[in-house]
Image 1 (cartoon, rainbow, N blue to C red):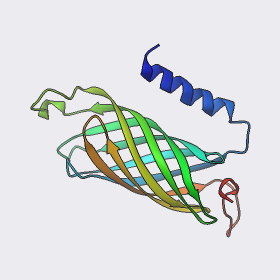
Image 2: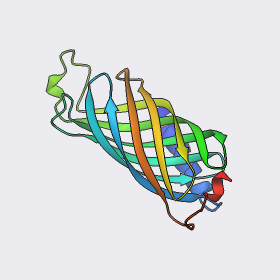
Image 3: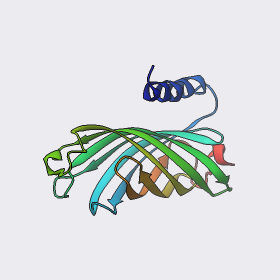
Image 4: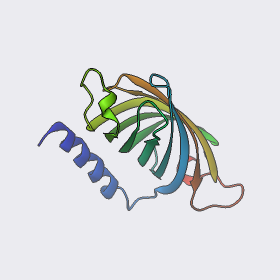
Length: 167
């Protein structure tokens, strides 16, 4: 079994093993800016939040008006470093599949149409019904940094609700 297959197996194992416990479900979207390629994109995501960590499947797309036209399918693991009553600070590890649509633009031939990407970073978010978030990530393969700014919606709770996982 390759290293990537082991990582995917462990992530899926955790998802299904702990899904019977009190996870919270959120969904949302974000705007993304890639500093190195000066590209603008958008993303959609879901989140299964547990006590100290979350599993976050996501899709990110950078349209064709950018220098790099691509999309990502991936899953992030978020580990809550600080859980305050109304906000949290978390570390991020993301493993994703990258489809580089206009890879003919790669002068060095390093990029292929299909790539695996690994990102590390950190984020901050509020805890409630509508949760704005900001994430800063570093893509190890491409040596790029990205800023994600978005909004998540918590499924469940009342008007002054704070997600139970983060109390």
